[in-house]
Length: 238
Image 1 (cartoon, helix red, strand yellow):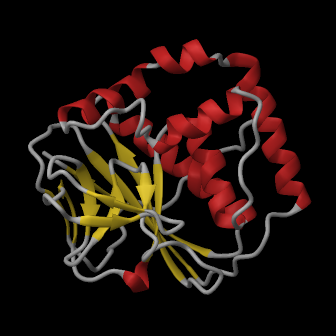
Image 2 (tube, helix red, strand yellow; image 1 turned 60 degrees about the vertical axis):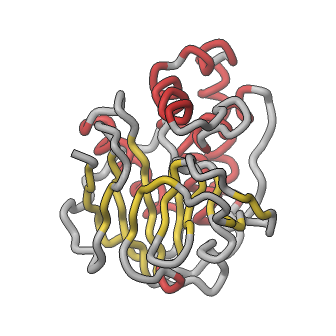
């Protein structure tokens, strides 16, 4: 059963600008700050809870359901407008849900990453995590520069064609695609103490859906991760 939802404070100040430099309506970001983290391995209790949610998802969802889901279709349509093939570069929440439906488990990374992966698959909206200390300046959703090099988690480098949608700071790409690949340079590590949690909204995703998703995600983080949840704020493209 999905955990009960707790309302977390909206409208916190991030202390940094976030803007959209792409000409697309209906995009949004909800960003929460997590501090005083103590990240370790997920507990047996969480793993049991995770398997319960996996069973719930598998009982109601097929791969055809995922293919036809209007939320995932909205992200796929968005990717096509940036010259990106969403069957090869899936938005993270769709990739996670497909993994569950196929009967596979998630990777074990850390308490926070494990919880966020589960929340993202459950509410279908992609989530990114950023070590805030690695950021320089503002955050911007923009198109990549031709020849710009992005290093994803794990070290693999991607050379951009100059069309792809990305999230960047003043110096580098933070996320390739709209929450498809997070950056090696800003990834969560056991020493991370201040994290930005980002939920990415597409045109079909309503403000109520975003609010429900952020509250569910932060409730799960608050329950399973040793940290302080500072609340969240919203940024929109129009």
